Length: 304
Image (cartoon, rainbow, N blue to C red):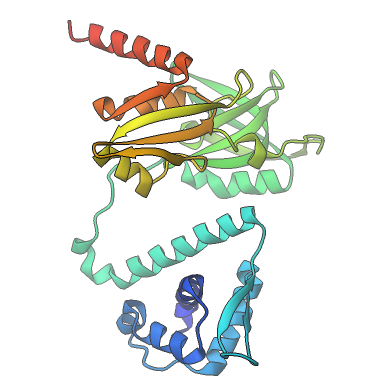
């Protein structure tokens, strides 16, 4: 079996066991009949290989698979890591699957097309992760879209966050001691210094961003219940690709779907709602409705 294929095997095994427990025979059939195994020309999968794979899945992803030997002899997921680690593992598995698909399709590059809009700054991710892990003070130049100026920054890097296909550094700005987000695509001349900052920050960023949409500053407002009504077609898209983890359907009629969220009504969320045009209407809160009206009226002025 090809040595560079093990990550895809792990992903396929997890995918199958996520659906339901399975015997070795069922797992083997699932793997050998997958397009991934067919493309790789793999025609055999031994019980010994499965046992090795399950051991490695436990080590890599903290996901324990056990075998009910006294019952139906099925393999099943007995335990999984905490939610935040599980989310990380899911992202990792998705990356493995995409990487394997791209590798297999290299000779058929005319069959896969990428978005021409590519996020910048990804070359900074590892250096910033190193800085976060080792509490290293970092310096860089940062471009501000509003002032159109580039300014030097000296920060304490604390976390990295993805939002709408862009990556942001969450850091304490050394100048004013305020927590800020910095788009990686606007960072240049990054330098991770030898100096370390004191580990006296007590942020739980998973909780901090729990009710956030995007990476906008959250200190000035509290999360609120937000209700929107969508056209049936747009609503189906939102169901397929949720806007936020708090999203839930609270009403459904022939031509529309009503969603409820609990989050900070930040400018990022306002922009997201406006991007749907006439397909989406805010029902509550009134404060967000008023903001939408102001933005729509200002937009109309551009055409008269």
